[in-house]
Amino acid sequence: MKMIIGLCLCLLAWPSFGYSHDFNSPTNLTSFPIVFFGDSLSDAGNKHQITQSLNASTEEHVGVRALPPYYDGRFSNGPTWADYLNQRLLKRFSEPARAAYEGKLTLSLNAEGRDFAATYAERQGNNWAVGGAMAAPGYFFDFDVIAPWTYQSGGELMPNVHRQIQDYLHRYSAFSEEQWVVIQGGANNLWFSTFGDRQDHPKCTAHQLLKSLTLSVEKGAKKVLVMNLPPLANSPAFASHREQANAFIQTFNAILKVGLEALKKQYPGVDIRLLDADQLFKNIEFNINQQGYYQNPMLNVYIDKLDQSAWDFTTGQIAEDTNTYVYWDGLHPTTAVHKLLAAKAEQIIHSVKQ
Image (tube, rainbow, N blue to C red; front, side, top):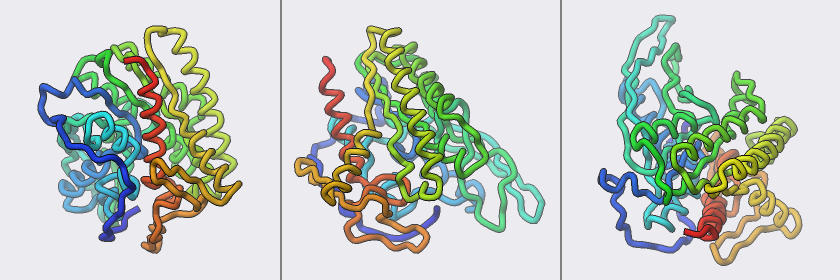
């Protein structure tokens, strides 16, 4: 998806704070009270910045993801739930974190291959999520090669969720007991199995996310927040695959829930909490179906459009009232929904004894 449209976005109201935490000072890096691992639902700009680097190193033969009207490299029309939550805890939005990467990318023109440097710099924020990442180990390929050039090899260079955690541990060795470790993923296993060439089973996908959680606990995490999958089967993007997507999501969430309970028993000294995105989305859907709208006056959220996109990226048309929609681009939620997710996450965090 590539649209270049200038747009001044009106963000939803959220309490304003002065920024005091130094994200770039090495002395502060291991003291982050919260770190994020995941995909485009949480990404604070990693995918955008990585594809910017690839665009520059390939003489603009690779497209840049999350350009406007996406907000500041996020896959939404405003801040994500990770940003809102981070603002509440650290008094600023989350910022990208990643390990540096150096490799070779081969593209082809008229059947003739040409090698380009595939590199991107490390970042030292607290949000390791990358758009397109799966609940899986290793790296993945997900970027656009601009015609007439085509992709040949070397594109598996962005870290999946498990690799993100490994990269964090390579830098810092362990998690601190005071940190909240936030993990979400699985949607892209569904996406690439539906629209790509993967054949991921939801049970295996859930087990992989649980494996990432277990690694975090074994490396010192004492407070873990895990998000399940929202009902993306009801999104416009999955309109032609609702039954398949719904079956995947239901199985994934059921296996994840059972696995979390087992890990709680296995690690009684660790506080493992579920952020139930599935239930939150379904509550929005229920209210819209019952009374025509969902409203949360405390958060200044009013949503009355359930199965439409605020932005039609095929035509470039953008609705005037974008934050009355559940979905921004047909798949990713609007910043209004992100705000609700953040409020729920904050409620969970504050319910845990510090």
